[in-house]
Amino acid sequence: MRAAASVLHLDLDAFFAAVEQRDKPSLRGKPVVVGGVGGRGVVATASYEARKYGVRSAMSTREARARCPHAAFLSGRFHAYRATSEAVMAVLREASPLVEPLSLDEAFVDLERSDLPDHEVPTVTAYAQELRARVSEVTGGLTASVGIGTSKFIAKVASDLDKPDGLVVVPPGTELDLLRPMHVTVIPGVGPATAERLRRAGIHTVADLESVSLEELVRLVGRAHGHGLHELAHARDDRPVVPERETKSVSVEGTYDIDLTDRSLMAGLLTRQAGEVATRLRKAGLSGRTVTIKVRLHDFTTLSRSTTLPSPTDTATTIARLARGLLEGLDTSGGVRLLGVGVSGLADWVQEDLFGDADDPASDGPASDAVPEPAALPPTARQRTWAPGMDVVHDELGAGWVWGSGRGVVTVRFETRETPAGPVRSFGVDDPQLHRAPTEEPAPQESATEGTTTPERAASERT
DNA sequence: TCTGGGGTCCTAGGACCC
DNA sequence: TCTGGGGTCCTAGGACCC
Image (cartoon, rainbow, N blue to C red; front, top):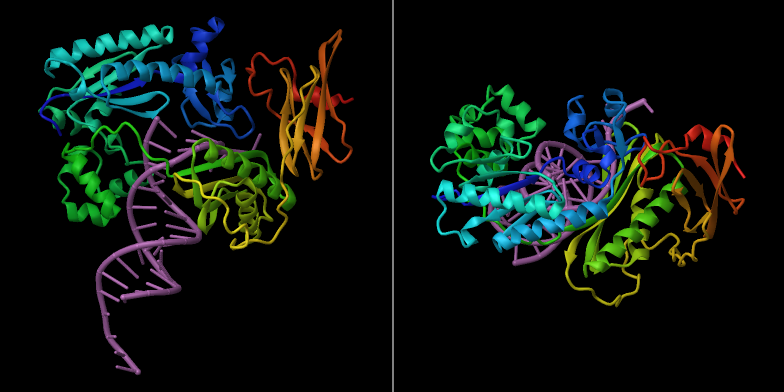
Protein backbone atom coordinates (compact mmCIF):
# COMPACT_ATOMS: atom_id res chain seq x y z
CA MET A 1 0.00 0.00 0.00
CA ARG A 2 1.35 3.36 -1.00
CA ALA A 3 1.35 6.63 0.89
CA ALA A 4 -0.45 8.36 -1.99
CA ALA A 5 -3.53 7.49 -4.04
CA SER A 6 -1.60 6.77 -7.21
CA VAL A 7 -3.17 3.58 -8.59
CA LEU A 8 -6.01 4.16 -11.04
CA HIS A 9 -8.50 1.56 -12.22
CA LEU A 10 -10.64 2.25 -15.26
CA ASP A 11 -13.64 0.19 -16.27
CA LEU A 12 -15.66 0.90 -19.42
CA ASP A 13 -19.38 0.80 -18.64
CA ALA A 14 -21.36 -2.10 -20.16
CA PHE A 15 -18.64 -2.13 -22.77
CA PHE A 16 -19.83 -4.53 -25.50
CA ALA A 17 -23.40 -3.25 -25.32
CA ALA A 18 -22.19 0.36 -25.34
CA VAL A 19 -20.18 -0.21 -28.51
CA GLU A 20 -23.26 -1.70 -30.18
CA GLN A 21 -25.38 1.27 -29.14
CA ARG A 22 -22.73 3.65 -30.41
CA ASP A 23 -22.58 1.95 -33.81
CA LYS A 24 -26.32 1.37 -34.19
CA PRO A 25 -28.25 4.48 -33.21
CA SER A 26 -31.52 2.53 -33.29
CA LEU A 27 -30.31 0.63 -30.20
CA ARG A 28 -29.62 3.71 -28.09
CA GLY A 29 -31.78 3.95 -25.01
CA LYS A 30 -32.95 0.37 -25.55
CA PRO A 31 -32.09 -2.88 -23.80
CA VAL A 32 -29.18 -4.60 -25.52
CA VAL A 33 -27.75 -7.98 -24.57
CA VAL A 34 -24.46 -9.21 -26.01
CA GLY A 35 -23.48 -12.83 -25.59
CA GLY A 36 -24.07 -16.32 -26.88
CA VAL A 37 -27.32 -16.42 -28.84
CA GLY A 38 -27.40 -20.21 -29.25
CA GLY A 39 -29.40 -22.60 -27.14
CA ARG A 40 -26.69 -22.71 -24.49
CA GLY A 41 -25.43 -19.16 -24.68
CA VAL A 42 -24.82 -16.86 -21.74
CA VAL A 43 -24.85 -13.10 -21.39
CA ALA A 44 -21.51 -11.35 -21.70
CA THR A 45 -22.77 -7.78 -21.25
CA ALA A 46 -26.18 -6.24 -20.73
CA SER A 47 -26.83 -2.55 -21.31
CA TYR A 48 -28.13 -0.61 -18.32
CA GLU A 49 -31.58 -0.57 -19.93
CA ALA A 50 -31.52 -4.40 -19.93
CA ARG A 51 -30.21 -4.55 -16.36
CA LYS A 52 -33.40 -2.86 -15.22
CA TYR A 53 -35.14 -6.09 -16.15
CA GLY A 54 -32.72 -8.15 -14.09
CA VAL A 55 -30.50 -9.24 -16.96
CA ARG A 56 -26.97 -9.85 -15.71
CA SER A 57 -23.62 -11.04 -17.01
CA ALA A 58 -23.16 -14.82 -16.94
CA MET A 59 -26.92 -15.40 -16.90
CA SER A 60 -28.12 -17.85 -19.56
CA THR A 61 -29.41 -16.13 -22.66
CA ARG A 62 -32.55 -18.20 -22.28
CA GLU A 63 -33.28 -16.60 -18.95
CA ALA A 64 -32.34 -13.16 -20.25
CA ARG A 65 -34.87 -13.59 -23.06
CA ALA A 66 -37.52 -14.54 -20.55
CA ARG A 67 -36.78 -11.47 -18.44
CA CYS A 68 -36.47 -9.02 -21.28
CA PRO A 69 -37.94 -10.42 -24.49
CA HIS A 70 -37.88 -7.11 -26.29
CA ALA A 71 -34.13 -6.64 -25.90
CA ALA A 72 -31.83 -6.83 -28.91
CA PHE A 73 -29.77 -10.01 -28.55
CA LEU A 74 -26.43 -9.73 -30.31
CA SER A 75 -23.62 -12.23 -30.58
CA GLY A 76 -20.89 -9.64 -30.55
CA ARG A 77 -18.40 -8.02 -32.96
CA PHE A 78 -15.07 -8.58 -31.35
CA HIS A 79 -13.04 -6.70 -33.91
CA ALA A 80 -15.01 -3.55 -33.05
CA TYR A 81 -14.52 -4.12 -29.31
CA ARG A 82 -10.82 -4.73 -29.78
CA ALA A 83 -10.35 -1.60 -31.88
CA THR A 84 -12.22 0.52 -29.34
CA SER A 85 -10.27 -1.05 -26.50
CA GLU A 86 -6.97 -0.28 -28.19
CA ALA A 87 -7.95 3.36 -28.56
CA VAL A 88 -8.70 3.53 -24.83
CA MET A 89 -5.47 1.80 -23.87
CA ALA A 90 -3.56 4.25 -26.04
CA VAL A 91 -5.12 7.16 -24.12
CA LEU A 92 -4.12 5.53 -20.84
CA ARG A 93 -0.58 4.98 -22.06
CA GLU A 94 -0.32 8.67 -22.84
CA ALA A 95 -1.04 9.21 -19.17
CA SER A 96 1.55 6.75 -17.90
CA PRO A 97 3.84 4.15 -19.44
CA LEU A 98 2.69 1.70 -16.79
CA VAL A 99 -0.70 0.43 -17.95
CA GLU A 100 -1.92 -3.06 -17.14
CA PRO A 101 -4.92 -4.16 -19.21
CA LEU A 102 -7.02 -6.79 -17.40
CA SER A 103 -9.37 -7.37 -20.32
CA LEU A 104 -10.74 -5.40 -23.25
CA ASP A 105 -12.68 -3.09 -20.94
CA GLU A 106 -10.50 -2.72 -17.85
CA ALA A 107 -7.04 -1.53 -16.93
CA PHE A 108 -4.85 -0.34 -14.09
CA VAL A 109 -2.70 2.77 -14.54
CA ASP A 110 0.23 3.60 -12.28
CA LEU A 111 0.05 7.35 -11.74
CA GLU A 112 3.40 7.36 -9.97
CA ARG A 113 4.85 7.12 -13.46
CA SER A 114 2.81 9.98 -14.90
CA ASP A 115 4.03 13.59 -15.05
CA LEU A 116 1.67 14.74 -12.32
CA PRO A 117 3.26 17.28 -9.96
CA ASP A 118 1.93 15.38 -6.94
CA HIS A 119 -0.62 12.70 -6.03
CA GLU A 120 -2.81 14.69 -3.70
CA VAL A 121 -6.51 13.93 -3.94
CA PRO A 122 -7.47 17.14 -5.84
CA THR A 123 -4.68 16.60 -8.34
CA VAL A 124 -5.53 12.99 -9.19
CA THR A 125 -9.24 13.80 -9.22
CA ALA A 126 -8.83 16.53 -11.82
CA TYR A 127 -6.53 14.31 -13.81
CA ALA A 128 -8.99 11.41 -13.81
CA GLN A 129 -11.76 13.68 -15.06
CA GLU A 130 -9.54 14.72 -17.94
CA LEU A 131 -8.81 11.09 -18.69
CA ARG A 132 -12.49 10.16 -18.70
CA ALA A 133 -13.20 13.01 -21.11
CA ARG A 134 -10.40 11.80 -23.39
CA VAL A 135 -11.78 8.26 -23.32
CA SER A 136 -15.20 9.53 -24.29
CA GLU A 137 -13.62 11.55 -27.08
CA VAL A 138 -11.68 8.71 -28.71
CA THR A 139 -14.45 6.13 -28.32
CA GLY A 140 -17.28 8.19 -29.74
CA GLY A 141 -18.99 8.81 -26.44
CA LEU A 142 -18.39 5.74 -24.30
CA THR A 143 -18.33 6.28 -20.56
CA ALA A 144 -15.91 4.85 -18.06
CA SER A 145 -15.95 4.46 -14.31
CA VAL A 146 -12.71 5.22 -12.52
CA GLY A 147 -11.40 4.43 -9.07
CA ILE A 148 -8.21 5.73 -7.51
CA GLY A 149 -6.54 4.53 -4.36
CA THR A 150 -3.34 3.53 -2.67
CA SER A 151 -3.36 0.01 -4.16
CA LYS A 152 -4.86 -2.05 -6.97
CA PHE A 153 -7.39 -3.53 -4.57
CA ILE A 154 -8.64 -0.16 -3.38
CA ALA A 155 -8.66 1.36 -6.87
CA LYS A 156 -10.74 -1.53 -8.17
CA VAL A 157 -13.20 -1.40 -5.30
CA ALA A 158 -13.48 2.37 -5.80
CA SER A 159 -14.27 2.13 -9.52
CA ASP A 160 -17.24 -0.05 -8.64
CA LEU A 161 -18.77 2.41 -6.19
CA ASP A 162 -20.31 4.90 -8.59
CA LYS A 163 -21.15 3.07 -11.81
CA PRO A 164 -21.80 4.01 -14.50
CA ASP A 165 -19.81 7.09 -15.49
CA GLY A 166 -18.43 7.66 -12.01
CA LEU A 167 -15.20 8.67 -10.32
CA VAL A 168 -14.24 7.77 -6.77
CA VAL A 169 -10.98 8.63 -5.07
CA VAL A 170 -10.30 6.92 -1.76
CA PRO A 171 -8.12 9.24 0.35
CA PRO A 172 -5.06 7.55 1.87
CA GLY A 173 -5.75 6.36 5.39
CA THR A 174 -9.48 5.81 4.88
CA GLU A 175 -9.22 2.39 3.22
CA LEU A 176 -10.35 0.28 6.15
CA ASP A 177 -13.26 2.59 6.94
CA LEU A 178 -14.47 1.92 3.42
CA LEU A 179 -13.86 -1.81 3.41
CA ARG A 180 -14.96 -2.91 6.88
CA PRO A 181 -18.72 -2.80 6.32
CA MET A 182 -18.49 -4.46 2.91
CA HIS A 183 -19.26 -8.10 2.17
CA VAL A 184 -16.26 -10.40 1.83
CA THR A 185 -17.01 -10.88 -1.86
CA VAL A 186 -15.56 -7.41 -2.61
CA ILE A 187 -12.19 -9.05 -2.18
CA PRO A 188 -10.87 -10.36 -5.48
CA GLY A 189 -10.50 -14.11 -5.16
CA VAL A 190 -13.53 -14.56 -2.93
CA GLY A 191 -16.12 -16.21 -5.11
CA PRO A 192 -19.16 -18.31 -4.25
CA ALA A 193 -17.21 -21.28 -2.83
CA THR A 194 -14.93 -19.25 -0.58
CA ALA A 195 -17.77 -16.98 0.51
CA GLU A 196 -19.76 -20.05 1.57
CA ARG A 197 -16.86 -21.43 3.60
CA LEU A 198 -16.40 -18.11 5.31
CA ARG A 199 -20.13 -17.78 5.94
CA ARG A 200 -20.16 -21.13 7.71
CA ALA A 201 -17.40 -19.82 9.95
CA GLY A 202 -19.53 -16.77 10.72
CA ILE A 203 -17.45 -14.42 8.56
CA HIS A 204 -19.56 -12.09 6.46
CA THR A 205 -17.92 -8.70 6.24
CA VAL A 206 -14.38 -7.50 5.75
CA ALA A 207 -14.48 -6.41 9.41
CA ASP A 208 -15.25 -10.04 10.38
CA LEU A 209 -12.39 -11.21 8.21
CA GLU A 210 -10.02 -8.66 9.69
CA SER A 211 -10.50 -10.17 13.14
CA VAL A 212 -9.62 -13.71 12.02
CA SER A 213 -6.07 -14.89 12.62
CA LEU A 214 -3.85 -15.92 9.74
CA GLU A 215 -3.69 -19.50 11.08
CA GLU A 216 -7.46 -19.75 11.20
CA LEU A 217 -7.79 -18.36 7.70
CA VAL A 218 -5.22 -20.79 6.30
CA ARG A 219 -7.12 -23.61 7.97
CA LEU A 220 -10.33 -22.41 6.34
CA VAL A 221 -9.29 -21.72 2.77
CA GLY A 222 -5.77 -23.09 2.26
CA ARG A 223 -2.27 -21.69 2.46
CA ALA A 224 -1.93 -19.35 -0.50
CA HIS A 225 -5.50 -18.13 -0.46
CA GLY A 226 -5.40 -17.68 3.32
CA HIS A 227 -2.32 -15.47 3.20
CA GLY A 228 -3.77 -13.41 0.36
CA LEU A 229 -7.09 -12.89 2.13
CA HIS A 230 -5.39 -11.98 5.38
CA GLU A 231 -3.41 -9.24 3.66
CA LEU A 232 -6.33 -7.81 1.70
CA ALA A 233 -8.63 -7.88 4.72
CA HIS A 234 -6.20 -5.47 6.36
CA ALA A 235 -6.07 -3.40 3.15
CA ARG A 236 -2.46 -4.42 2.63
CA ASP A 237 -1.70 -4.77 -1.07
CA ASP A 238 1.68 -4.17 -2.68
CA ARG A 239 0.99 -5.77 -6.02
CA PRO A 240 2.70 -3.70 -8.71
CA VAL A 241 1.11 -2.57 -11.95
CA VAL A 242 2.70 -4.83 -14.57
CA PRO A 243 2.27 -3.88 -18.23
CA GLU A 244 2.90 -7.24 -19.87
CA ARG A 245 2.30 -10.76 -18.74
CA GLU A 246 3.64 -13.90 -20.25
CA THR A 247 1.08 -16.18 -21.91
CA LYS A 248 0.88 -19.50 -20.07
CA SER A 249 -1.55 -21.43 -22.24
CA VAL A 250 -3.57 -21.25 -25.44
CA SER A 251 -6.88 -23.05 -25.78
CA VAL A 252 -10.03 -23.35 -27.86
CA GLU A 253 -13.28 -24.83 -26.65
CA GLY A 254 -16.85 -25.05 -27.78
CA THR A 255 -20.22 -25.85 -26.25
CA TYR A 256 -22.67 -27.51 -28.62
CA ASP A 257 -26.38 -26.91 -28.71
CA ILE A 258 -26.99 -30.63 -28.88
CA ASP A 259 -25.03 -33.15 -26.81
CA LEU A 260 -22.55 -35.08 -28.91
CA THR A 261 -22.52 -38.86 -28.82
CA ASP A 262 -20.74 -39.74 -32.06
CA ARG A 263 -17.07 -40.42 -31.30
CA SER A 264 -15.88 -39.73 -34.83
CA LEU A 265 -17.67 -36.41 -34.73
CA MET A 266 -15.89 -35.55 -31.48
CA ALA A 267 -12.58 -36.56 -33.02
CA GLY A 268 -13.30 -34.26 -35.95
CA LEU A 269 -14.14 -31.35 -33.72
CA LEU A 270 -11.00 -31.84 -31.63
CA THR A 271 -9.01 -31.93 -34.86
CA ARG A 272 -10.41 -28.59 -35.93
CA GLN A 273 -9.85 -27.03 -32.54
CA ALA A 274 -6.27 -28.29 -32.54
CA GLY A 275 -5.80 -26.50 -35.86
CA GLU A 276 -7.03 -23.24 -34.36
CA VAL A 277 -4.76 -23.64 -31.35
CA ALA A 278 -1.78 -24.30 -33.62
CA THR A 279 -2.57 -21.24 -35.71
CA ARG A 280 -2.73 -19.03 -32.65
CA LEU A 281 0.46 -20.49 -31.22
CA ARG A 282 2.31 -19.77 -34.44
CA LYS A 283 0.96 -16.25 -34.71
CA ALA A 284 2.28 -15.61 -31.21
CA GLY A 285 5.58 -17.33 -31.91
CA LEU A 286 4.89 -19.91 -29.21
CA SER A 287 4.97 -23.65 -28.88
CA GLY A 288 4.15 -25.92 -25.97
CA ARG A 289 4.82 -29.33 -24.53
CA THR A 290 1.57 -30.20 -22.77
CA VAL A 291 -1.63 -30.92 -24.69
CA THR A 292 -4.83 -30.96 -22.65
CA ILE A 293 -8.36 -31.82 -23.67
CA LYS A 294 -11.42 -30.69 -21.78
CA VAL A 295 -14.66 -32.62 -21.91
CA ARG A 296 -17.87 -31.50 -20.26
CA LEU A 297 -20.42 -34.28 -20.02
CA HIS A 298 -24.18 -33.97 -20.32
CA ASP A 299 -24.48 -33.60 -16.54
CA PHE A 300 -21.90 -30.78 -16.48
CA THR A 301 -19.14 -32.84 -14.87
CA THR A 302 -15.94 -31.61 -16.42
CA LEU A 303 -12.98 -33.84 -17.15
CA SER A 304 -9.51 -33.00 -18.35
CA ARG A 305 -6.78 -35.25 -19.68
CA SER A 306 -3.30 -34.15 -20.57
CA THR A 307 -0.07 -35.48 -21.92
CA THR A 308 3.37 -33.93 -22.08
CA LEU A 309 5.80 -34.17 -24.99
CA PRO A 310 9.58 -34.22 -24.58
CA SER A 311 9.83 -31.06 -26.69
CA PRO A 312 7.42 -28.27 -27.61
CA THR A 313 5.18 -28.32 -30.66
CA ASP A 314 3.07 -25.85 -32.61
CA THR A 315 1.98 -28.40 -35.20
CA ALA A 316 -1.73 -28.93 -35.85
CA THR A 317 -1.36 -32.60 -36.71
CA THR A 318 0.60 -33.40 -33.56
CA ILE A 319 -1.76 -31.52 -31.25
CA ALA A 320 -4.76 -33.09 -32.98
CA ARG A 321 -3.40 -36.61 -32.76
CA LEU A 322 -2.59 -36.28 -29.06
CA ALA A 323 -6.00 -34.75 -28.38
CA ARG A 324 -7.79 -37.59 -30.15
CA GLY A 325 -5.70 -40.11 -28.24
CA LEU A 326 -6.66 -38.50 -24.93
CA LEU A 327 -10.33 -38.65 -25.85
CA GLU A 328 -10.09 -42.39 -26.39
CA GLY A 329 -9.64 -43.03 -22.68
CA LEU A 330 -12.92 -41.33 -21.77
CA ASP A 331 -16.42 -42.70 -21.50
CA THR A 332 -18.63 -40.25 -23.36
CA SER A 333 -21.62 -42.50 -23.84
CA GLY A 334 -23.91 -40.19 -21.87
CA GLY A 335 -23.29 -37.33 -24.27
CA VAL A 336 -20.85 -34.41 -24.37
CA ARG A 337 -21.83 -30.76 -24.28
CA LEU A 338 -18.35 -29.20 -24.47
CA LEU A 339 -15.06 -30.14 -26.06
CA GLY A 340 -11.82 -28.21 -25.87
CA VAL A 341 -8.12 -28.43 -26.67
CA GLY A 342 -5.32 -26.47 -25.04
CA VAL A 343 -1.56 -26.29 -25.09
CA SER A 344 0.50 -25.21 -22.07
CA GLY A 345 4.07 -25.48 -20.90
CA LEU A 346 4.85 -22.81 -23.45
CA ALA A 347 8.24 -21.87 -24.81
CA ASP A 348 8.73 -18.71 -26.82
CA TRP A 349 10.92 -20.53 -29.25
CA VAL A 350 9.87 -22.93 -31.95
CA GLN A 351 12.04 -25.91 -32.53
CA GLU A 352 12.27 -27.92 -35.70
CA ASP A 353 10.54 -31.23 -35.48
CA LEU A 354 13.77 -33.13 -34.94
CA PHE A 355 12.18 -36.38 -33.96
CA GLY A 356 9.30 -36.43 -36.36
CA ASP A 357 6.39 -37.89 -34.47
CA ALA A 358 8.30 -40.94 -33.29
CA ASP A 359 8.48 -39.79 -29.67
CA ASP A 360 4.80 -39.10 -29.31
CA PRO A 361 3.19 -41.06 -26.49
CA ALA A 362 0.01 -41.36 -28.54
CA SER A 363 1.29 -42.01 -32.01
CA ASP A 364 -1.56 -44.23 -33.03
CA GLY A 365 -4.52 -42.99 -34.99
CA PRO A 366 -4.76 -41.23 -38.32
CA ALA A 367 -2.56 -38.20 -38.81
CA SER A 368 -3.91 -36.73 -42.02
CA ASP A 369 -5.92 -33.67 -41.26
CA ALA A 370 -4.36 -31.30 -43.73
CA VAL A 371 -6.94 -28.76 -44.78
CA PRO A 372 -6.87 -27.20 -48.25
CA GLU A 373 -7.49 -23.51 -48.79
CA PRO A 374 -11.09 -22.60 -49.59
CA ALA A 375 -11.82 -21.35 -53.10
CA ALA A 376 -13.15 -17.85 -53.76
CA LEU A 377 -16.75 -17.55 -52.62
CA PRO A 378 -19.57 -17.29 -55.13
CA PRO A 379 -22.17 -14.78 -53.97
CA THR A 380 -24.85 -17.31 -53.09
CA ALA A 381 -22.65 -19.98 -51.59
CA ARG A 382 -20.19 -20.63 -48.85
CA GLN A 383 -17.45 -23.03 -49.65
CA ARG A 384 -15.89 -24.73 -46.71
CA THR A 385 -12.95 -27.01 -46.36
CA TRP A 386 -14.10 -30.01 -44.54
CA ALA A 387 -12.57 -32.34 -42.02
CA PRO A 388 -14.77 -34.91 -40.35
CA GLY A 389 -16.90 -33.02 -37.90
CA MET A 390 -19.71 -30.63 -37.47
CA ASP A 391 -19.94 -26.94 -38.17
CA VAL A 392 -22.31 -24.04 -38.28
CA VAL A 393 -22.49 -22.62 -41.78
CA HIS A 394 -24.13 -19.29 -42.32
CA ASP A 395 -24.65 -16.39 -44.65
CA GLU A 396 -26.08 -12.98 -43.84
CA LEU A 397 -29.53 -14.23 -43.00
CA GLY A 398 -29.48 -17.77 -41.76
CA ALA A 399 -27.47 -20.61 -40.39
CA GLY A 400 -27.50 -24.37 -40.23
CA TRP A 401 -25.54 -27.26 -38.88
CA VAL A 402 -23.65 -29.32 -41.38
CA TRP A 403 -21.90 -32.46 -40.39
CA GLY A 404 -20.37 -35.52 -41.92
CA SER A 405 -17.38 -37.77 -42.10
CA GLY A 406 -16.20 -36.87 -45.60
CA ARG A 407 -13.12 -34.86 -46.39
CA GLY A 408 -12.34 -32.12 -48.87
CA VAL A 409 -14.20 -29.06 -50.01
CA VAL A 410 -17.93 -28.76 -49.66
CA THR A 411 -20.08 -26.00 -51.10
CA VAL A 412 -23.08 -24.86 -49.15
CA ARG A 413 -25.63 -22.94 -51.23
CA PHE A 414 -28.04 -20.39 -49.89
CA GLU A 415 -31.08 -19.12 -51.70
CA THR A 416 -33.68 -16.54 -50.90
CA ARG A 417 -37.03 -16.65 -52.70
CA GLU A 418 -39.55 -13.87 -52.34
CA THR A 419 -43.03 -15.23 -51.60
CA PRO A 420 -46.25 -13.53 -50.55
CA ALA A 421 -45.46 -14.60 -47.01
CA GLY A 422 -42.06 -12.93 -47.15
CA PRO A 423 -38.58 -14.12 -48.02
CA VAL A 424 -37.99 -17.86 -47.69
CA ARG A 425 -34.53 -19.14 -47.01
CA SER A 426 -33.07 -22.41 -48.04
CA PHE A 427 -29.70 -24.03 -48.12
CA GLY A 428 -28.24 -27.25 -49.33
CA VAL A 429 -24.93 -29.01 -49.68
CA ASP A 430 -23.50 -30.60 -52.78
CA ASP A 431 -22.03 -33.63 -51.04
CA PRO A 432 -24.48 -36.49 -50.44
CA GLN A 433 -22.29 -37.71 -47.60
CA LEU A 434 -22.95 -34.55 -45.64
CA HIS A 435 -26.11 -33.90 -43.70
CA ARG A 436 -27.62 -30.66 -42.68
CA ALA A 437 -30.00 -29.29 -40.10
CA PRO A 438 -31.02 -25.81 -39.03
CA THR A 439 -29.61 -24.38 -35.84
CA GLU A 440 -31.60 -22.43 -33.32
CA GLU A 441 -29.40 -19.44 -33.85
CA PRO A 442 -29.33 -16.82 -36.54
CA ALA A 443 -26.17 -15.93 -38.39
CA PRO A 444 -23.60 -14.86 -35.79
CA GLN A 445 -23.21 -11.32 -37.05
CA GLU A 446 -26.92 -10.66 -36.95
CA SER A 447 -29.15 -9.46 -34.20
CA ALA A 448 -31.85 -11.92 -33.31
CA THR A 449 -34.37 -9.14 -33.28
CA GLU A 450 -33.45 -8.23 -36.81
CA GLY A 451 -33.23 -11.67 -38.37
CA THR A 452 -35.78 -12.37 -41.05
CA THR A 453 -35.49 -16.14 -40.91
CA THR A 454 -36.97 -18.42 -38.34
CA PRO A 455 -35.37 -21.80 -37.76
CA GLU A 456 -38.65 -23.42 -38.64
CA ARG A 457 -38.71 -21.74 -41.99
CA ALA A 458 -35.13 -22.69 -42.69
CA ALA A 459 -35.93 -26.26 -41.73
CA SER A 460 -38.97 -26.54 -43.92
CA GLU A 461 -37.18 -25.48 -47.05
CA ARG A 462 -34.40 -27.16 -48.91
CA THR A 463 -32.96 -27.21 -52.37
C1' DT B 1 -32.62 -27.56 -22.63
C1' DC B 2 -30.15 -23.92 -16.32
C1' DT B 3 -24.91 -23.02 -16.40
C1' DG B 4 -19.75 -19.36 -22.52
C1' DG B 5 -14.90 -18.82 -23.61
C1' DG B 6 -10.30 -17.72 -22.54
C1' DG B 7 -7.47 -17.49 -19.18
C1' DT B 8 -4.72 -17.77 -14.20
C1' DC B 9 -3.44 -19.84 -9.93
C1' DC B 10 -3.63 -23.40 -6.35
C1' DT B 11 -3.84 -28.09 -4.23
C1' DA B 12 -2.96 -32.84 -3.75
C1' DG B 13 -1.09 -37.14 -4.87
C1' DG B 14 2.24 -40.06 -7.16
C1' DA B 15 6.68 -40.91 -9.46
C1' DC B 16 11.31 -40.32 -9.20
C1' DC B 17 15.82 -38.66 -7.68
C1' DC B 18 19.26 -37.53 -4.26
C1' DT C 1 16.58 -53.71 6.33
C1' DC C 2 14.10 -49.87 7.81
C1' DT C 3 13.38 -45.15 8.12
C1' DG C 4 13.19 -40.30 6.18
C1' DG C 5 13.35 -36.14 4.15
C1' DG C 6 13.30 -32.60 0.31
C1' DG C 7 12.73 -31.17 -4.37
C1' DT C 8 10.89 -31.42 -9.02
C1' DC C 9 7.82 -32.84 -12.52
C1' DC C 10 3.45 -34.43 -13.97
C1' DT C 11 -1.65 -35.06 -13.82
C1' DA C 12 -6.47 -33.96 -12.47
C1' DG C 13 -9.60 -31.10 -10.51
C1' DG C 14 -11.38 -26.83 -8.72
C1' DA C 15 -11.94 -21.83 -7.75
C1' DC C 16 -11.88 -17.61 -9.69
C1' DC C 17 -11.72 -13.54 -12.99
C1' DC C 18 -13.50 -10.70 -16.93
